Length: 101
Ligand code: FES
Image (tube, rainbow, N blue to C red; front, side, top):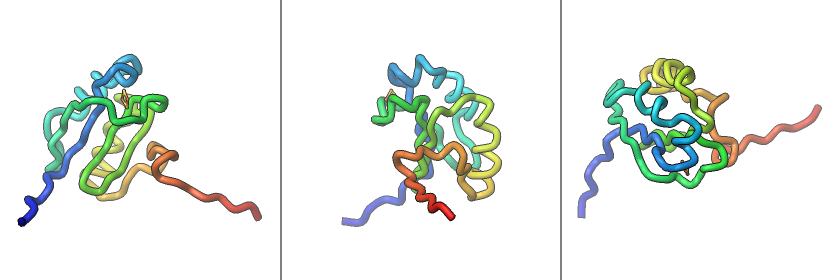
């Protein structure tokens, strides 16, 4: 069976922890569609301790502790420019290794 291509999407969690941390304003800041990405309010994404959580597909970039003031940079640099915003990438999902020296 052929798989349908996945529409690029921005999922903004609208569940309890994220809502308490301001995710309704984050969802509003993204709008309904931006740069070809459909913006979707969604249920818990399982990253409640670092809320608000934003997941971008199909590239599977997960942002954490997103506030409305972070949204313009995510839109410009990532959604329009193709380069994820490193400082807001969830370190529990996007592992980084630092070597001393
Ligand atoms: S409530 Fe948003 S990740 Fe769980």
